[in-house]
Image 1 (tube, rainbow, N blue to C red):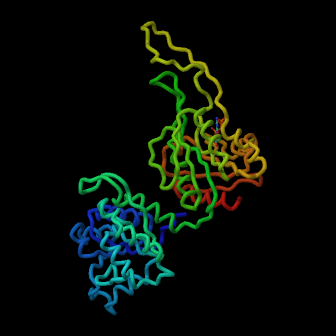
Image 2 (image 1 turned 135 degrees about the vertical axis):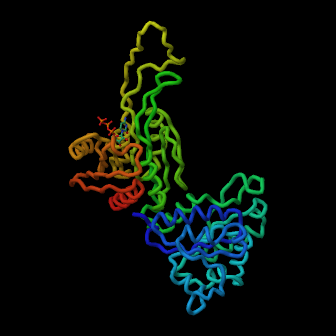
Length: 402
Ligand code: CTP
């Protein structure tokens, strides 16, 4: 389920250096299957050309309320009536002040004022210098815009185009995209706390070597993102992976299976749902050398022995809260063959109500996957799709079971 596919958005640009991020945002929105009608203020055109935005959106950009292309010469009415939402990114301090006062002296503010408020939400992504952002006037305006029902996104923190550092820069395009996806996602997990594990674990042999596996963490991160977008409070316990943290998700990094086991048990007491996506190493070396093991030139190889790691999922599934039905546990199974057979057996062995099977070697590191959902009544396939789409479908399935 891609919540932006088929949506029609007006993307408004007011003046600010963050206009370059609006170009990326436009491209990302079109990629999701949304249609984007760009509207630019005069100030925005100082930072970005309408030609660029036209090329990225595939539609002629509107820059003036006097645009005679519209038969009735009412671009503000026509554009605001056909939109599923209006997104102003960047929203400058001046533009927000205009919105606040209901001023309408150019097309973008005019169509924001003219929109049917019950049907066409207005979402703004502020972008400005840190002093402008923290100025009481701006903060007053933000509070009032929110009270007026306008959705004001967060600002980013860090180095600014002016050379200063602080709050006020516009969120990155990917972050705005995630917020917009969340905005359109039914809040089926609102009020629920979800704990997700993801990625591989790393079992050290010595300070520079270890045993791990090919799990990239992409499926678990996609599930954490989907749960968050569905309104859940999400904690993600991640093995060593190089993936950005999904918006709004609390992330705790761990390395070994035993670290993950300890962290899961410290967090799971607050969870309503536990989704064990991690490819936990089954074994760890029985000794861990404090110094790098050196070749001594004799051709002798080190002998490795192993201990079995704790089974995190099985231990959680056997906890009182899980047995009493207060915690819903979902396991994963990465198999190389006979998926239905192994997934069915694993669900019973781990004693979880739902187990999700996938073919490990063909999905590790990829952006797509296919899932087999196995419960006490049988199996249902979620056919080949992007991991993010599958994650939304899985979350919808889990929400129905709660
Ligand atoms: N799992 C876990 N702790 C472990 C091993 C696995 O929590 N020490 C969880 C995984 O996160 C997954 C499920 O158990 O949800 C199944 O993992 P998988 O590696 O497919 O199965 P194993 O139990 O390790 O069995 P096998 O390797 O024999 O297939």
